[in-house]
Length: 95
Image 1 (cartoon, rainbow, N blue to C red):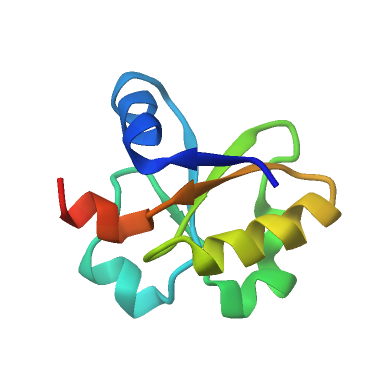
Image 2 (image 1 turned 90 degrees about the vertical axis):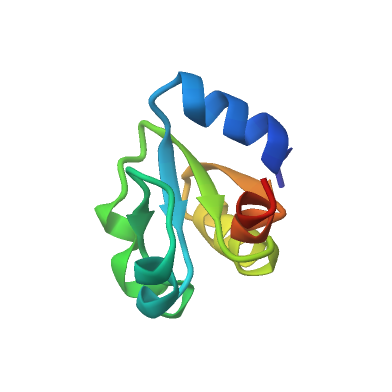
């Protein structure tokens, strides 16, 4: 599985237009999220992943990196190009 540190991801995020997929639950997403991120909770991903564009590289984020790692594994198996953002939103809160 491809992974990226939060620091490197955040530099890219600030300077580029990225497809960011946040797999936290809706309540977590509503409390705090990155601008432009798309929320597809891991608990619903099997039913909603087909909304994603297979032609894009998706950066997958959660709170710490565990749920996003599981989401990346699932999405990669479905043929999506994904990168797990290590540290997740916890790293963002600690900026």
